[in-house]
Amino acid sequence: MKAMQMKDYGPASDLSLAEANKPSITEDQILVKVGAAGVNPVDTYIRSGTNNYSATFPHTPGSDGAGTIVELGANVTGLEIGQRVYFSRNLTGSSAEFTACAATHTYPLAEALSFEEGACLGIPYTTAHRALFGRANGKAGDKVLVHGATGAVGIATVQLALAAGMDVVASSGTTEGAELLRQQGVKTVIMHNEADHLAPFQSLEAGFDIVIEMLANHNLDQDLKALAFGGCVAVVGNRGTVEINPRDLMARDASVVGVALANTKPAELSLIAKALRPLFEKGVLKPVIRHSYALTELAQAHEDVLKSGALGNLVIRIS
Image (cartoon, rainbow, N blue to C red):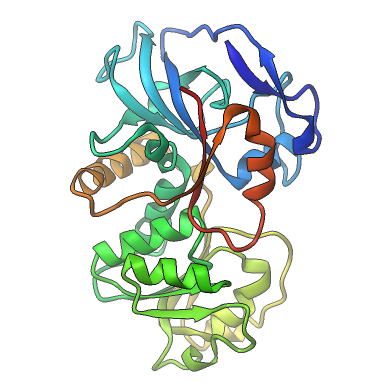
């Protein structure tokens, strides 16, 4: 089969198309013919061996994807050959024609979604759901800031928060991103590249019940000042360190929680998938695809996913 691979840690330019063996599976695994692969920042960390991530070589990038089951292990139940599925944290890399998946991380794909849309679900929508509901305990009526809302997780968070009846404020760094957020239904869009953009919200009366933070090293100190009493910052993304004043937390009885999808147990992942599926079927949730690449363009996708000004998801067309 064709697969994009690396022989050692390195830059995206080291990725090359290779002829690889089709993965074999155990009795607890699934073989999927990949229709499309997702591209997420974590894929670049694994590829380069940064942020405490590691890989074995040759390495085929890609955690997320969607496709068709072509083989089932003897112990796998609840799924069948020929079924359309999406997956996350697969075992052999999704930037390939076939990938081996764990049954615990493979879910039915809503009929309303294409494979390319299905490749956008595993990390972005699961992370968004867990951040909003599993970690920040969001509920209808909460005032929520999605800080850095135009990327894959940000758009998913906006859609989920609006669907749950929350009062959503979202931030963008570009006019194109601001327009995308308005198209999603956000009434209040702020520009996070403007100085003091959180100042109007930095009081107990005007503050947020929840902040979903995509770049904590830039924003956390100001986020804390923009919380309502009992508010919570859920940290989804971070690329460095930041200095905060803990009195900003103390004055509000506030909290900061981390969100790492790798910490989520299979039972919780399954419940999130069940909660999301009817929302996809009804069109309440709809992935935004910014760009679709050919398999051989994976290196460019890895470069693009780390650029500022994201506008939705990046996906790789496989078949």
